[in-house]
Length: 289
Image (cartoon, rainbow, N blue to C red; front, side, top):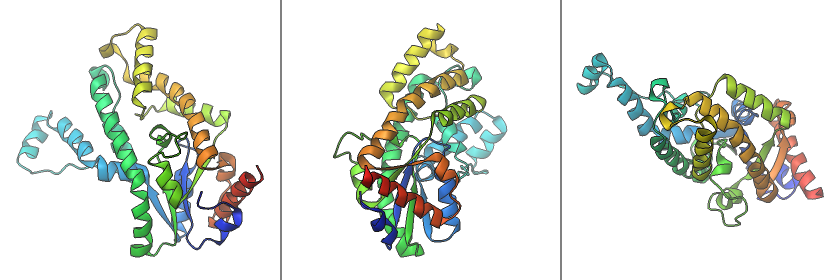
């Protein structure tokens, strides 16, 4: 870790932190708060994925849908309209829409093979976006004068790294330049996230082997063929399995590469001073342990 003690972190002229953990526990809340104070640069991995690496795929997906509408088809073919994604830090829907959901095309599903292809694209994009963090740290200071840097990672970070591998190509690079900080939720937080997902299911990233196993288990349990699958029902069913799969991986990253802070403590952070104190406490607790 680049900061081994609380004092090292507090006295660092350039602080750099990468927040990771389940989506919905406060990563983006903290990033937006720190950015609003003017001294922290907010680097969103999901935003980088959706703009730099998946932007053309997302736009092509929109265009393919528009080409099915005769009125829009004519306008597109004559370059009379321009279709692009309006992805922002707060609105990542274009990226989620592109990932899609497998199942019945009459219910908005896509073929499982196409779903896997898009998942592979997302994996490669996420790895590249994480590695882009390091040059963005230099750009943040050189171009904009930000002394501190906050990397707001994707909720699927734990699926594209191997926390047990000392030479993991992503974690080994990131840990040399910033402190990895897990926002750790409770069982109650996990249940709330699952309930929230049930109300509004969104496309997710799955590691490929796990995805294939989950898909086959779902088809067997429901007794369905691939094109009979209700896309929302599958991703609701798969989300709970994915959540259980991810939790120990988040913990392993924190144990071997960084520190953890409780989601309840993150919710009480109101300003950069609170945030620094929270990180310092986490480093102090790790030192004692």
